Image 1 (tube, rainbow, N blue to C red):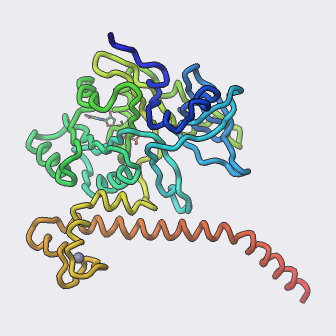
Image 2 (image 1 turned 90 degrees about the vertical axis):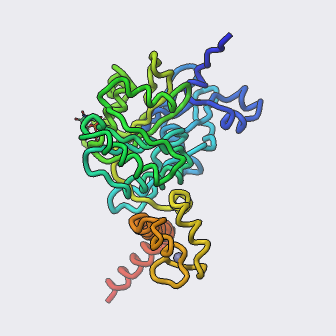
Image 3 (image 1 turned 180 degrees about the vertical axis):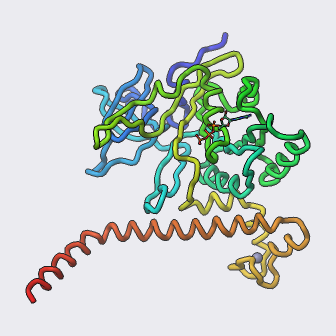
Length: 358
Ligand SMILES: Nc1nc2c(ncn2[C@@H]2O[C@H](COP(=O)(O)OP(=O)(O)OP(=O)(O)O)[C@@H](O)[C@H]2O)c(=O)[nH]1
Ligand SMILES: [Zn+2]
């Protein structure tokens, strides 16, 4: 007899989370998943339905939580604790802000979307691969707008180029406007599975999300809240449940607005994992600290000369390393700076007072 999954399993509950709880805790506390995040409240789903809580604080500081997180609630539906994440996506906050921003937690698959007909760039896919590897999430490449391509040869050629970035990853070409494409995505859906989408503007992310969600209107789960000027704004990210159909059996889609462009920080291991071909070659370089620019005995440059490695790939690796180092250093500095800011203010105030005395 087939046992139908319970609501917790449908929400993505699994042994990884269960084993963080003692039997006693399991009796007294209730697990709930954050399905939407807003400035002033979090929307949670649990076995017994949904509820709202105010963003939790720990030791007087706001606790960093994000959509997809699992939390424990006490019997009065109050926040008790945050469970350890199986995966977490983070980036440097957009613009010039020096902050690391949590984007989503506990995603199983990150669909990296790129369109076959416009502005196709391997470098951009590599950037998203770094994000996925750093987050410990399986990346899957979706090449959209296959229907607009001139020929199957052209599709095959691009698919091969992408596959060369990592022979073990899945690369699909599809038409987001065709319902049959759901069949291709069904490998990554199913009870409790959580999917995220990233990619540039216009590549077809929303089209695929809508395809998965069927007739469910994206807006329905969004909570509207007043911003400081009294306007209604839809804010934050949210998880949407995929309705089961003959092609798809449940799962969740993370709606991540603002995930079109990203800057990376604190992603060294993600870069290493994405460019493992280069880091493996680098072990053979004559110098331990070889920068692979013009050093003698550089195994990476030799591989390029032999035609085993593309120069484009080395340049993409070096660019991401530079960006990572720059952003991480700035963020680390900012943290130090924040700490000493109080001190600075006090010394400026005291200097001002002294100046006034003259
Ligand atoms: N022919 C064709 N058109 C597509 C396909 N996927 C998306 N489109 C169209 O491309 C346009 C952009 O698609 P969206 O889904 O809005 O792209 P997006 O990635 O969500 O864009 P942003 O919201 O700006 O990030 C829309 O007009 C879609 O109808 C596809 O596979 N084939
Ligand atoms: Zn080298």
